[in-house]
Image (cartoon, rainbow over all chains, first blue to last red; front, side, top):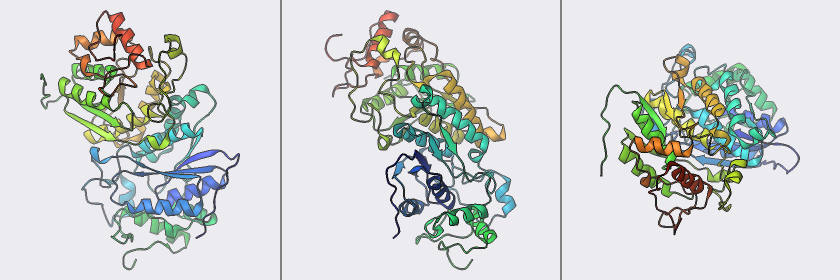
Length: 240
Length: 240
C-alpha cells in the first residue's frame, strides 16, 4: 500500500476533521497540498454508519497524516437525529426535497461540537488552523455548514483560547469546499490523488459496508460522479 | 433527604452546566428561581477530581432537576492540562499569582466544548436557554469565562441550529455569576437554599474526597466564605 509519511518540518500543523466521507477526504488532501502538517480528527459518536471510521483510517493512512485521533463522544444521550436514534433514514428523495429543508439526519450542534474539539487539539498543538469539509452548495439544509456559521465560530475560537487571548495565534477555520459543487470536489480530489474507493458516504450501508445508493448522501455523491463524468469506485448494493 | 421534584409545567426548559462545584450549584439554584425547568448537564472527561461528579449528582438531587445527564467525553487524547494530564496542580499560590495569568489547570477549549454539548441538548429539547456559572471576577485567567466569549458563543448558537435558522428560538447563554465576587455568589446561593456541603471545588482532594485547602480553587473558595462571614461546610484535610 502506498502510504506516504509526513516528515517533521517547519510546516504548520493543522487539525483536519475527517469523517471518512468524500468531502473530508478531499479536504485532507487540500490541507496537505497547501503545506500543512495534517492532524486528522474523527469521532465515534454512536453513529449507525460506524464503517465510516474504518474509511477514515484508510484515508488517513493513504494520504498521510502526522497523527490520526478518533475521539469518543456520546451524542446518543441527547437523541433527536436519524443518524443516532431510531428514526428511519429517508430514501429516494428528489434533489429538490433534499435541498428544501433541514434533513432529519441532522445531528444537533454536531459541527459546533466537532469544531470545539478541533479547537482544543489546536491549542495543545500550538496550531491555528482547522480544516472542515462543509459545503454550502449541494447540502444547504444544514445550518452549521454555512459561511456565516464558520465565521462566528472563528470569533469564538479567538476569544476562547489562551493562544487567541495572548495574540500569538489567529485561529482560522478553512472551508476549501464550501463553494464547490460535488463534481468540482471530486475533480479536485482526483487531481490531488484521493482514492474515493476508500471513502464512505452512505447513511445506511449494508453489513458488507456497501452503499445503499438511495439515501440523500448516496444520491448527492452519485450525482457528483455523474456530473464529473467518472465512475464512483466505492461499492454499492446491486445495480445503480 | 429533602429532594423537591420539579412538576411538568409551562415553565421553559433550560440546560444548566453542572460541575458539582460551588459556582455551578449556585447557577442551578438561580435557574430554578428564575422559573426554568432545569436540565442539568455534567461531563466525565478524564478529570482527576472525578468526585465532583458525585457532588453534581447530590446537588442535582437536592435542588431538583427535570433530568440530569452525565456525558462521557474524552479530552485526554489531547493532553495539555493539569486537570487531565500529569502536570502537578499548583498549590499555595498567592491571590495575585492566581489572578495574574491563565492557570496550568486550564483545559483547552473546555467551555466551548461544554457549551456545544449544551446547545445540542437544547436543540433536542426545544429549549433556548443555557446557564453556565462562569465568573470573570475571581478567576479572570480563563479566556472562556469572559463576557465577550459568551456573546460570541451565542452568535454561533443562533447560526448553528435549526431552531436559530428557522427563527422560532433565540438562544441565550445566561451567566448569572459573571460579575459577582465569590462572597456574593455564596450569599446568593444560601438565600436560594444551596447546601454547599454537597459541592466540591478542590483540584486535588484526598481519597476521602476531602479538599486540600491549598490549590487555587480551594483558596478562592475559602476566601469567599471568609468574606461572606460563613464557615465552609465542605470537608477539608486537617486544620485550615
